[in-house]
Length: 95
Image (cartoon, rainbow, N blue to C red; front, side, top):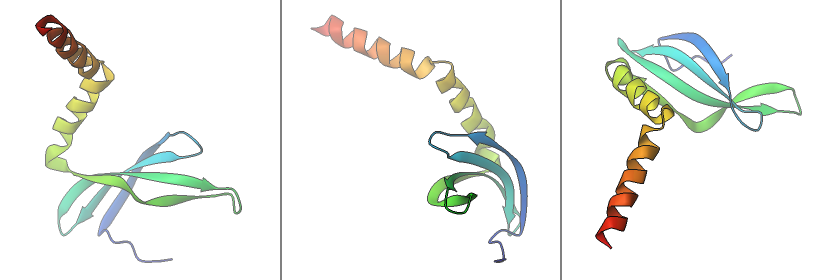
């Protein structure tokens, strides 16, 4: 098996995606800096295995994680959509 790029890697869990894909979350460390890695994996029927997608992921510095989680929660609450609707209404009023 190939040596990992990371000095430390701890698998946290996975979430199901569309089309046989899944998203795996890990806590990783390189040169003393921790990051949260979210990586897309895909299913290959020929050998019944999951493989990491190339360049389909993100490594979030621990220091930024809480801010990013808050933005994701805001998006899930529909606040982003509501803000866009308000902008559309303002444009309509200007006409």
